[in-house]
Length: 332
Image (cartoon, rainbow, N blue to C red):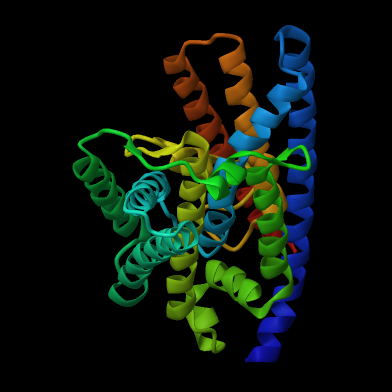
């Protein structure tokens, strides 16, 4: 059975990688057009300060998006990212307010995020609950807990040199962007070079067949959501450092930006196809559009319209690519 699976999998993987390469080239063209368009019509868009701001904003999306990319490749979804960021931010602020050592507080925040993600993973893997429903329930519960525990007010804490360094620049680059790129390398290696990464693709392609081949599907699903919770918590830590407080209202709508970036990057919502490079390019497409619209003074409500149109177009394009792929496979 293993040999047969390997024989069938090779051509499919080759075609998928080719499709993603074309998608990535298209995203590079879009990014170039955005730079030319906004750069020639918007004052300050090309400035060094604005480029650093783009990196900071992109990092907030990308750090969570690395884990969500693997989740979507596995054929699942996580809509709890925004409230997870806000809730772990509030938890970190309360811990620091209580004079817990900063490193211990950060580890605790990451552990809280990982534990909450694990709950969603267990509900999906062992109780058969759709991941959308499990994470939607988590979305509501965490947002409510964050507002309830803070009375919708920012949670301040004493000045902290370590958090200040996370909000600062390292060698002229925002610290959050450096962390984003390091994690990009880590997740790229995991997805391309490890048995775990190959198992994620196999589960997204056909979970039943993957299980018959000996892949521990349930355990991997739990680990995926645990990782997503921890990455969202890390984004919450960096956002807390940047804002200087924990805020229940922060990261509102972040989950939609994350999912949009992943889908724009070419990851199939039906699972089995995707790449970290595509997600990185998708993150910058989303970030550049948002930054350019803000600099041009576009109404914030209309910005939401643009974001919604981008998501719909991305999903439509993804669906068309999948249909073309299946049609070509059927002709062979």
